[in-house]
Image (tube, rainbow, N blue to C red; front, side):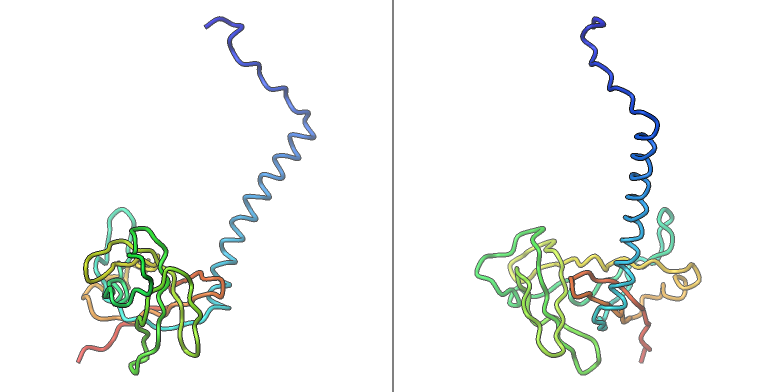
Length: 185
């Protein structure tokens, strides 16, 4: 390359302008972090809470620390619950309509491609289609991993049935609030 083919350098900004841009950049980063934290707290404070039944799968990973992979009963649903004429596709958004059971947990009553209206005690949980087969679908909600303290992961590693309290904010964001083990008969 010859010296005349190099791009011309950008002119240096004067010091006050550079400082102003640096301040705006730092302020934007701080506001982003505070916004993420506020969204989590707002989901717990303003959201509607309900319980789901689950089963822990893998309680420990050397790279990520102690966490539980949770498999909910609503992760794999029969295809008869799908409420649309078109077949669901992988990575498609799916809205699961949940209704309370006598045991106090919620179960899926229908799956929609668009957000349905919930009435009474019903709750809508947003997920995505991970797999579709002839008689069912597998959904993912972003609630399948729960990080726990080291002492708690040892206690929970026995793969007992559990209940997870979920909070869903009015704008659709979901978050795990609490985890309880169920007593074995």
